[in-house]
Amino acid sequence: MNKAVFLDRDGTINIEKNYLYKEDEFVFIEGAAQAIKILHEMGYKVIVITNQAGVARGYYTEDDVIKLHHYLDAELRKHHTHIDAYYYCPHHPEGVIPKYSRTCHCRKPNTGMIDQAVADFEIDLKESILIGDKETDILTGKNAGVKYTILVRSGHLINEAGTEADAVYDDLLSFARVGFQDTIRRSGEGK
Image (cartoon, rainbow, N blue to C red; front, top):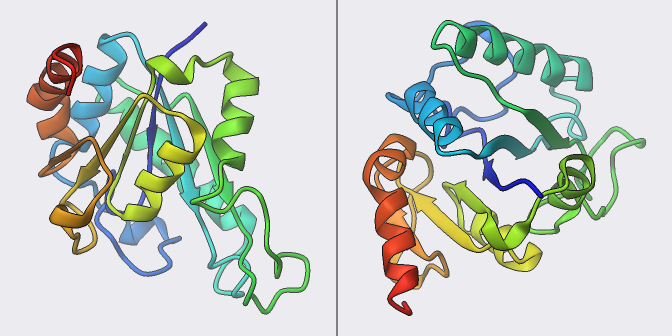
């Protein structure tokens, strides 16, 4: 079986912007591409799971989401790395596009995107990690049974004292460089 790092997109890989879908508005968080490369070197599949309620709200289309992910792929190739797969949820119960205006199993903190990735890539969740910038991300990891959940400070304002995350780091790169080994070590000590 494979092990994976599940990454939220906005606020974890790229600078948080409300309803991002335009290529010219995409900006990497400093060190994110390098961090993705390190995670691959550590033997992990790197999989993006992202809520994209802007589709249900009519701000952009699924094609726009896919186009942005192709752009992200091209940018990562410049850093000699890649994302193994993207899973996104286009739904929202308060959406204005009928096709997407519903409660679903894929919208975080539900586990549908992770469940699909597990099926597609034969992932062992007991050896996998989830990293995100919101408590919703952390709850997704907990709900799915991911071994480690990591909250990063690079996106939304977070409540570090109230988080259920296993650890908190400044950003994806700080986790990849230092936090990865720290988290594994602490886990071995019975944290």
